[in-house]
Image 1 (cartoon, rainbow, N blue to C red):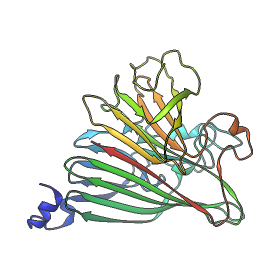
Image 2 (cartoon, rainbow, N blue to C red; image 1 turned 90 degrees about the vertical axis):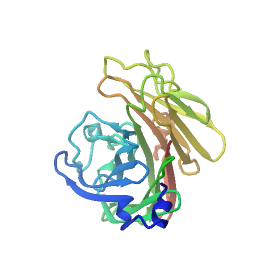
Image 3 (cartoon, rainbow, N blue to C red; image 1 turned 120 degrees about the vertical axis):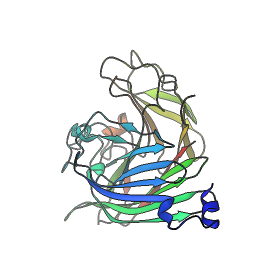
Image 4 (tube, helix red, strand yellow; image 1 turned 135 degrees about the horizontal axis):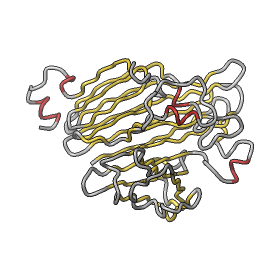
Amino acid sequence: MDAGELRVGGYLSRPEQLVRVGEYQDTSTGLGRVLSVALHGGLQANIHLDRGIDIGDTWYKGQLISWVSPTREADALQKPTEFQWLERFNGGLVVTCGLENVGAPIDGHGLHGTYSHRRGTDINYRREILADRVVFELTGTVSELRIFGRRISVYRTIRLESSLSGAKITVSDRVANEGLSPEPIAILYHVNLGAPLNLPGTKVVVNSKSYAPREEHADIHTPEVIGESLDYETEAVYEYLGFEGSAGEATVSNSGSHTVKVKWDRENLPLFFQWIYPSKGGWALGLEPSNAPMWGSERENEDRGMRILQSGEDFETRVDIEIE
């Protein structure tokens, strides 16, 4: 039965029957506070409140959708430097990168910045039972605040929707400069997919005209069809070019699993990258809407191609992940 039929029929005593939320402290890996959310229709997700209010392990109808990293320790670092970010990259469905850098370390800023190592505050959530689906919605804040310096806040909303026919996850952010000086802002959403959704033969379709690799790879020649796993540590990264319209869309599918669509508003996330980690024991696919470049001549400028946010100014981003 749909959620609405269960409600109208009087078969529910409490909304928790259709939207179950549990909070626990992850002491085994150091993740900190975790919300575990299970919705009628088959969507389940963990939300990491002490790691940027990002989304961890995610299942739909019993199948794991997100990628699980080979790293085990997950406690946040005070300020990740150089490539330390990789030591605490535990995977999960959405890992947010920034706000001072995305891409390789540069000018004293570590790989992919510090956002995902910051603690969420002002956490609130609600449940809603609609005619054809159930909804869980969470709000919270992740801040980068300094005396005599940069004061940036990200006001995040995560919305989970689940029905008998599909599921949708939305991450919406309002990024605000609450300091007195203009500040450069980089933000990238690392959407990570693993097996059994991501397997050899999985297809990736993006609504762009072309793509270009960060560097040529001897064993990976296209991002459009995932190849076989490799016996050595390696990666390939592509940038997609020539989008048409205001919306971006990337579809990942294989015949034996679900189909996942990642959609984003290109007004404030104009760039899109794809990460392939084909090594055995690693094996990940990353889809990455971004507002800043990860390589190229723009990185040589003072602002490294990032958006300059004036004092009192803000902008909004949105990423939708649809699962069928």
